[in-house]
Length: 223
Image (cartoon, rainbow, N blue to C red):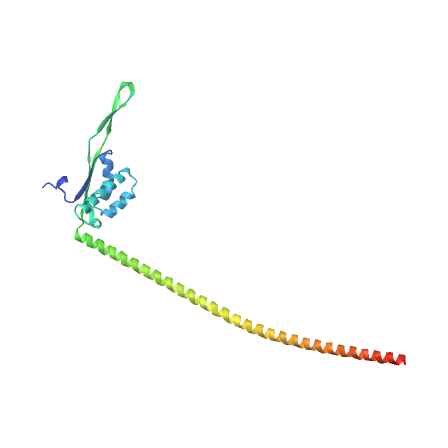
């Protein structure tokens, strides 16, 4: 039995007609995204280095927009069910050659068609299960990372507290030693001051005694 005709395939389509590029060049890009989901196909086209990838990406975006706005489908559940490039009209030009001759130039065009459809329920379920597993794995990684950070913060705070306690203990010992040294110095200063005052009193007494002796000697000489 003959297969389904191109214009009778189910799905939402977008068509670009008379694009100035040969169909063979466009087909090389279409072969990369056929039967791919819309997200993966968009990534492949964005990272492609062919000129046709830009045009095919625009046609794909148009097909997805048609499916979302016209048919009410979810963009994350779409895949490329069919894509093909047909030959369009050919522009004929002439190039002058030697001896008065001319060579024909054929400027090819193509019609690009992309059809997107909703993925089967089994495929959607597998994608959702894979996405949930990836999300759970990411949540575990984030939780373990946060736990390790909290542990590092706690250990750092504990180490800082230990250092502060040690510094405070060392400071207390030093202050006690300083107080003892200060007390000893004050005692020595008091003793030196008392000895200096005693020496001063003795000197003053000696001076008074000398003055009295000199006075007595002067009286005796006068007599």
